[in-house]
Image (cartoon, rainbow, N blue to C red; front, side, top):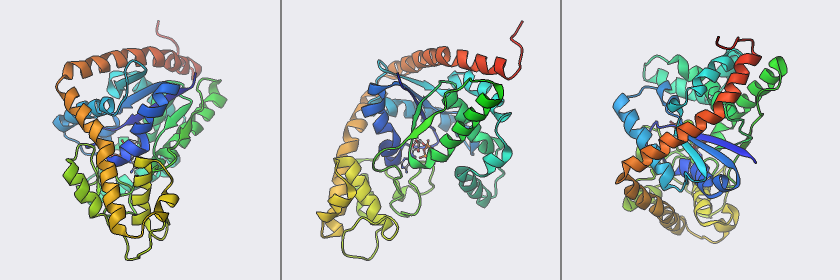
Length: 332
Ligand code: ATP
Ligand code: MG
């Protein structure tokens, strides 16, 4: 059976980008057709400035929202990265296979490092090595597929390169994973700046729809989305990025293709209105279920405990094999 692994960082409140680009597919498709593991990658959230109390809150909230989005612990494994030591154990070995040049070429590193420097802060070394830990997350489970948004394809490529290199040098140990992308909304853009990806750690929330935003807030954000001064509704990502973003979001929420949806509109106003309503409807069940789950924190905790147990069992043999293959003696 195909094995799927993917993760999400508790760095902020989850967004419509996270939902359409990743989570919804995990819940609607991946968990039903594959042996799937989904992880709240809390260690990755330590690579940028963080507040311990906020991280605790967001880790719980992220796990709860994943369940609210439809992940079913009867068919998939949901857990916290820091509860399974195999991730960091393997990460160190992979640091001995990856190069610093590879790390410095990563777009996410360049973008997040630039942002951090702008603020005048120093960079955490872990921001540079982040993709190696992510490779360990994936390779520890022998994942065949990694369903992510488009922004993560470069990191999955790196995991592939590292797996191939390790296998060539030390003998076959890792499955070489591949990215899977959603057919639409693989890269939801910020509504106020459609040249930038919508991200949960964006400073200003005006262009970011959060899964837990009240319906009226969602409507307001979508209706105020920045478009251009054209009149005709066409889907052209390069020339009309704001409009294309709305059409992508509408297509992802209602089905259909962004191009054919464009043909049905003759004004920006009606497109925005329909998009706002479509987003509110898509998020409604997630918000409702989230509210119910918040009333039962013991249930969520139980899911995470059992998830970590299953994940540890799956990861340990592969990581042990990697330790032996690279030349480390077994404990005596
Ligand atoms: P951060 O700003 O802290 O990096 P993020 O919103 O990018 O947060 P991640 O935890 O890094 O979220 O990514 C979780 C998943 O969501 C990944 O699969 C990523 O590709 C996907 N994703 C994130 N943002 C978007 C987006 N705007 N459109 C589509 N998919 C996205
Ligand atoms: Mg990200």
